[in-house]
Image 1 (cartoon, helix red, strand yellow):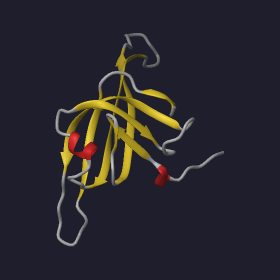
Image 2 (cartoon, helix red, strand yellow; image 1 turned 90 degrees about the horizontal axis):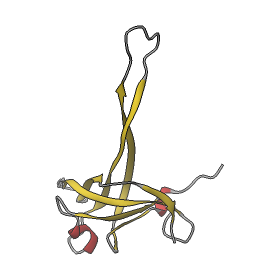
Image 3 (tube, one colour; image 1 turned 135 degrees about the vertical axis):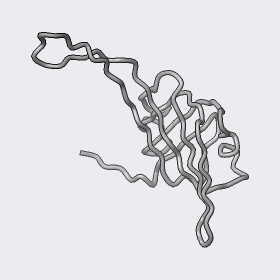
Image 4 (cartoon, helix red, strand yellow; image 1 turned 180 degrees about the vertical axis):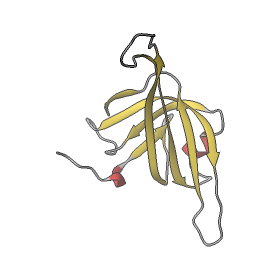
Length: 129
C-alpha cells in the first residue's frame, strides 16, 4: 500500500498556484431522504444530490496572485493535487466559490489565512495532465 508525504501538495486557483499553503482538505458528502413507511422493519432511504466543499490554509502573502484572487464570492476552477503537480498524479478538480476567509493575526506568530469554499457542480477525480 502506498503512502504519500503531505508536504508535496499543490493547489491551483484559476491559472495560478496558491503560494505558502500549509494544509488543505476536501469533503464530499451526500444527504439521505428517509422513505421508511409504516410496516417496514428497517429504515430505508433515498440518496439526495452529492456536494463537496473544503478549505485551504496558507501563510498570508498579499503579493500572491492566487491568494489575492480568492475573495469572498470569487469563483474559479480549482485543482487540488495531494501528491504534487506531475503527469499522472492524483487530482481533484472543479469550480469553487469562496465562502469564508479567516485571517487571524497574533503577536509573536506567523499570519495565516484560511479560505473555505463550496463546490459549484461536480468534483472531478482524475489525474494531472
